[in-house]
Image (cartoon, rainbow, N blue to C red; front, side):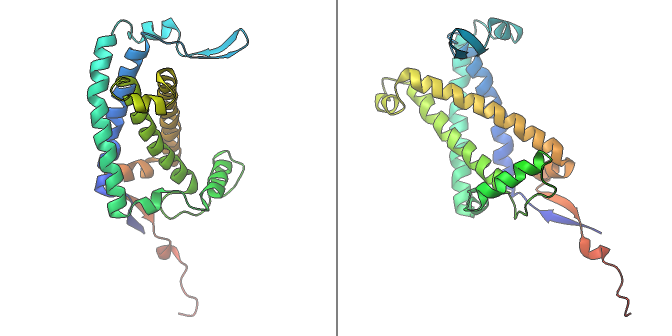
Length: 228
């Protein structure tokens, strides 16, 4: 037999799917802004290991010379990103969903066990109520990253009006670097997130669309009682 297991409330699904295109547009418009001055790279001595990003990258995606356009899109969707994030945080605390999302004292141990399982070094995954330890840590981290993006974004958007915030984030150059690093973090989170969704299959993806999963009811698979 199969049974329906309710997993994600409607509000959580809405916040999730609204945030996805908003964040995509924020990253795309951020690249349009970053093109005008893109100095960041990973370098050892005189050897450049990774440059974010070579001119060919901007040319291929047709991102060059669109600074004003990028700033317009970025600053509009910044407020949508902020409003969606605030409403999400308020909802999780009012509804009590935060209990499933925030890490607890077992989360880091569970996260290590989940990592070993995903790498094929552990046969079974640790039991979980709604989100495992790795998910709790990741979802809390992405929330903190969102707050960091907002603060550093305001610091470089209005460095004079928010001079105290710019100073608090280490100055304009440091705030810009942190803002860029957080963006790279979003991209990495997104890639890992998609990989995990594909790995766990359609049932998991369906739950974020419909709010429920269809699971096998093991109670209906029990062998008959031999005494009957």
